[in-house]
Length: 184
Image 1 (cartoon, rainbow, N blue to C red):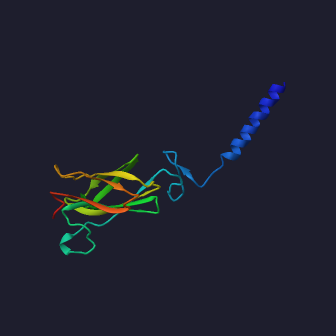
Image 2: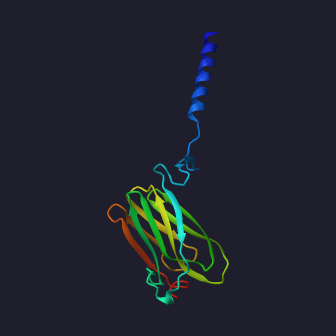
Image 3: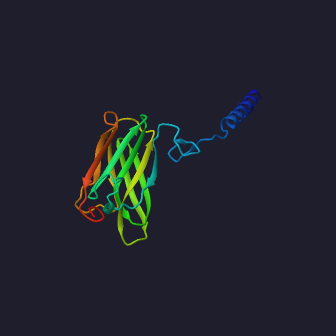
């Protein structure tokens, strides 16, 4: 009988602790097990990645000073701030003139892969855009960045390079492009 009473008391205690400890929180748990605030910001050390914005179709013939690279270049500009936030700008990313874009960005060890995916293009033309990304909670270190693009011309180099966020927290890497929409 003592064993039965002890078991009932133990089960009741566990139930009360679980009820009190499993209350609601303002944090959400993602599929990766990381907690995120209601604003979508990661609360721990797992990198939180987002597409910030896509600029407008560029017109190089106007000579607008905001153009940061010639039209025959495909570039990544980066700046690392606060010891944890990596900002990336893909300068002259090629897409349909009226794109519907999705992005798959992964941080796997020391490799950052940005796969730009065009879901739908409603126009019969291609255009160059600037695309901004942000990776939060990224530890300082050396990373290899690879950009997978939907219109990479055959024979042109992949936009990829190493960056050391500890010794060089800002930089730019460009590769030449040989075909439309680049160079026009």
